[in-house]
Image 1 (cartoon, rainbow, N blue to C red):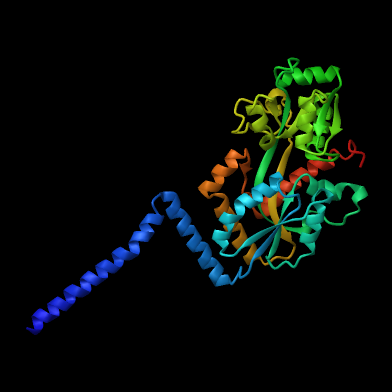
Image 2 (cartoon, rainbow, N blue to C red):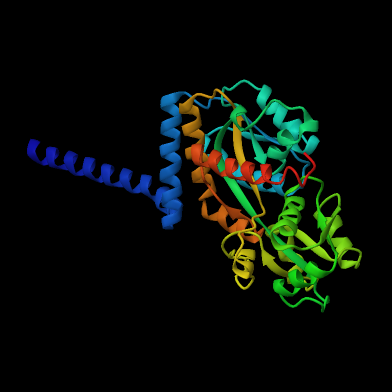
Length: 349
């Protein structure tokens, strides 16, 4: 009898264990219905474990965007932060600090404690021209920041109104501009678009005359209205107007073609000269951050950027993700710094 009772107890225990395992696996299997979800769950658990060991972060992180709400940097930041919060396990609060070509926000970032709880976007070329311009009287430079990771590289483009029959190709445009003065838009003196015009005039012998506008929307209106000949802008800013048949993009100002405009040649292809114009939007903090905190942020940002939903949303916006981090990110900025220094005479600096 004792043997029978013992066998019954063992059987009940086995059923209970099996039922318990089955109950635990059901939600898990539903959450991991795809390899992407399984990977996201695993990476989030790993990030949480790393955070738990270090004790960082333990409270909300402030992410400064040095431009107005609704702009390209702001939209990209707010698109990324939900995925970043999942990786870090704390809120990431976007705080807009526009003004001074970005330097209102950059200055606040540099005055913050290097404790990892205040970080911010840094954008080129404004970050660099903001201290290279002698009239700014700034002592800060790239060495003032702790560069964490890049987020976006938005290549520059050269475009014209769709019904401008003078130019079928970028070669047509440049050949015409060598003999005739053409106006071209910039989003301000010393901006990336302005630097691109100066580069083309210097290296291709063109006669583009810069017309400074308040932003891409104003520049596009000027070109569509026939008041300015050429639109200098970024890929993310021209995809929609080109799709709507308002403009034609003739050339891309980076060394390789971009996926959003696969049929548009680069200026290097067309002329053998590598004229580069792009906007970098990355994440930095004040100098002196704990290397362990930097590493945790880099890992969390990289995983957030690689989230399939984030990738798809960035693609829809026409933005190219670039997760170059740490010292390599700084080298990317140093390259742009050298390019800008080479144009100081043309800028009157």
